[in-house]
Length: 287
Image (cartoon, rainbow, N blue to C red):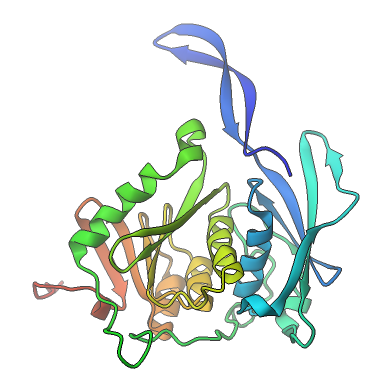
């Protein structure tokens, strides 16, 4: 596995003054994910939590949903070096009896750090069947998940404060899981926003924590359809983003009973779906 950061020489220009200095950059290296020995996908990622990334990826593909369905994950022998990039391969072995969906077997695509679903044949192929419906309780006696706007407004600062690698590089996306009370459960950083979410979900799978039925997923960028899908597949009821959602993300959220909040900045936010999980005090204005 490669390093999370690397050093490069940079020419710095400030107010007309020129100097040379080393700069810390986030590392980006390819990772091939194999499923039971067969190549499945290649993603550009920041090294670290590779096993969790692969496990989370397979949760979003509908292959895994419980820790006992995962036999093991190993690095394959014979990883090569291409230029400055280390080429890593992980093989995910499922437990006997686990059925692999046809959508996963047909995937076998290259994904980039900005788009984890490039190469999907159609929108229908993306809409994998979730194992859990997103309801408003985690059991017969649990109260509905309901968050105060003030609590939501505090989460981006908590996310930013926990971004250790971003502080050194300024070049990473982040995804964090919070409890409904605003407690930080986990945070992952990666050059790819979809990888950061997969690392979170994969760790939850390995810990036996799926479905994540009473959590909030906060992402540092926009909320794409893909991230909404990953939230649904992990049983997460609440997705918030500091930037904009896409139209398909809003459609999927509405269809799946997912609460979707965008432009979460300071005390301002837009609620695009699932407003019943937010304690709104004032009547919505028209227009």
